Image 1 (tube, rainbow, N blue to C red):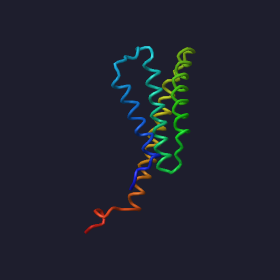
Image 2 (spheres, rainbow, N blue to C red):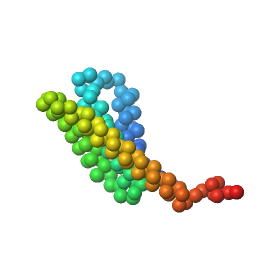
Image 3 (tube, helix red, strand yellow):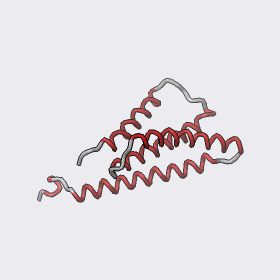
Image 4 (cartoon, helix red, strand yellow):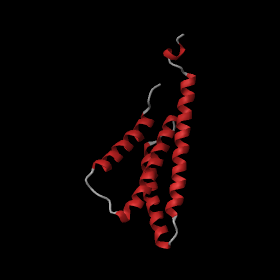
Length: 127
């Protein structure tokens, strides 16, 4: 089984992005941490969606990049708006985005397992 660039691009981009934030010396103010965590979850949702489209053979890098940018900004903006009007939109967005991440991961796993069953390796078929 080969790894296509449609799968590799979002995974490498996600690893580089999260590593860059993790290794940086900048500390996020506590007042912004809930917005950043929601934006990170929206970014993770976009990455999982990109991997899913890659394994399905439908990956387009411009859709991943614009979706990543728009989803992260929109998620943080909705959480901020919810805080301003006194409604906890943060929790609703976390539930929705978390559900989408797990759905995408389950579909990716199902695709890879079905591919593995369709094309077993020589070690698995040896007596």
